[in-house]
Image (tube, rainbow, N blue to C red):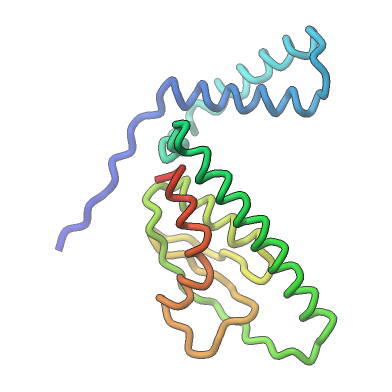
Length: 175
């Protein structure tokens, strides 16, 4: 049995331009005004950051840059915000009611995301959601500490419970 490896294309001008525009937009948001001097400084800073990041731009090759990727990105952000609120309320309930049973476990979760960027975003999403913490990522498997793992959980059920709601939207804008 042979395994197929994904051939990542070299980071191109599109990814560099994307990073440049992202850094420039962040600069302008942080500055908070459209003063000419601030915009000129933003142009210079964005250029320096983009050039300094050039050796690491290959991670952006997993990003799908197209107008059709905007809707999945917005859906992902909405799903993440809802999951974040629900997980915070659940953790607050557990803290305020110490009698609630906990079943902490380290579980394996399998992802269908192919790019390192996709797996990175998924791992960070899991970590940012209270009650779960990504401990390790190896190929398609994420090792996750779960505060309340149902007894007898297997790979399929933990994957469904932890990643499925995020992964379906992530596939729309990352490989």
